[in-house]
Image (cartoon, rainbow, N blue to C red; front, side):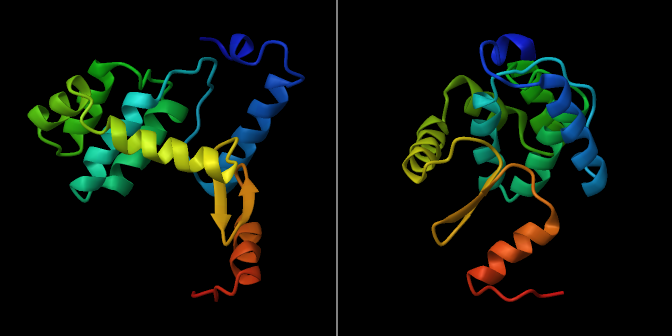
Length: 155
């Protein structure tokens, strides 16, 4: 689905949003490409649970981020996710089973339900002790959230 279809009827300036995302990604050193479409990430989230179970959660999530936001790949396709998972060292049979049998569906459902109960309406959302920040935030804002909640900065 193209972004204009996704946000049809909403007062959102897609060009401005994309320019802002590109700027923030550059400031944070994150890979980000020209994105014109959106894809259902549900299966990618489920595969992420397999990666987490195998101690590869951070590696997987960065690779999925790059695939989606920088390379524009359709992370809703089994073929894309098979390649992504196995390229990180996950066993092909485990990836296939996770996707075909929806082995982590319930775990992702629980995440979605928890997010709904917490009032999360966008990603990313950072929540700490009932306070939240929505959207990509500068480092200083995240530090402020933590310090406001008694977490000391360690650097």
